[in-house]
Image (cartoon, rainbow, N blue to C red):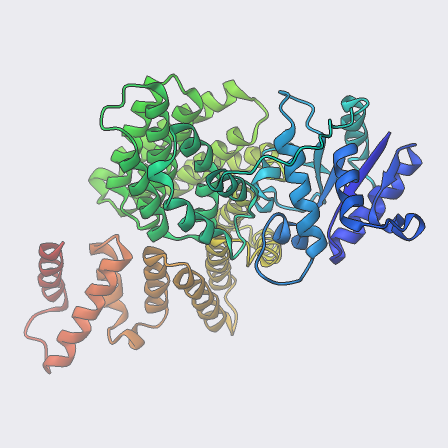
Length: 543
């Protein structure tokens, strides 16, 4: 059997491709790749690439440069070979119409995040290959053998049929790397053709559009996407397909931007409507996805609620997370979706510990977090890092500071490699810095306060860059707690404000009002407590 290796000439691409080629040849597989070009010296390099891709199974080695240039043109001459080669690979995938046995196999280092893969390749199963140990080679060989002898494509002498511009745009969206700088431009271009798109075209494009917008972290762009798509749907949703599209938009798009802007009550209503539509379509997977979203939203509402409403939200969060876990377990007992649900459930129990100070809740959170580790595969990079940060906070609460230090250093080191890979990773980096700030304060020491302030300020920078006002306010509130004098108040004011308000944005407004009143007169007319009651009445009347 012959195979063609498609790769980029960056450090990681060369390393994996070289080791893969040598390992395959030792297994008796004939490898075709550009390292052998000097011997063959083809008269036409493009013709050699086209023939190699179309006539043999293709192993696409995913590396940073390969992902950046896979089907994406940004006007530069960098990696032109990868750009041309990847477009031929795309053509090979589009021409494959069987239900299985796709002749294109993505291959990546075990540490490579599947979230970064071009959307077209992300839809395929990514094989893992360790260049040092050659772990994963057996699976790749089995996949190649399962393809059997690949028939040569039928060649015609007629000119290729011209590709419709709208179809070409859909293909570009599917092939684009979500975190590439040029990808949001494709979404803006796609919004112009939504009104004239068929229902099938609209539904086909949505997964790629969703990935790109979420990687950019743009609430404004997601608002445009949802608004434009809702207008394209008929008012009377008489078909299952229309209801499925609307459920997708509600659960995966509208709820996302509402949650991102911390509009939790509105997001809750959106998700409940999405679940109702998914049930009407008998889409069990989307119902399970919606239930997991409900769990996250109820947990967030518990954080912001007064004590009398807090327990209700926490109970609802636990029930929804359990329901989602059971549904995803029924689909795939060893799947990443089930692991993501265990991660959410662990976070809910940790929130219950912080809000209600129940030691049993902390123990349960620790046990669930340990379970989730075994269920999250390497390609669930975002959930893996979320879990890592959660485990840091659980270890701090349990007094296991050396373990917390080990985990937080691991999280920050790993996330540093994803700093340019989208808004979700920037958000996780901010969360990891907040966790380290909490750890520094627990460890105490001479520079603990200064180092904690530095970590919180770093987190604030990440949250500001990706426009997360609630998270930014949380950081500003933590800085005010560490240095009340800078905010123009006293430490007792901070304690009272924290008891009165749960939302950090309201707390900051409270400190600002208190500082203004302190500056307006000498010798307070009222006691501090009475002053804060008046401030609370004023702020609540404004909401």
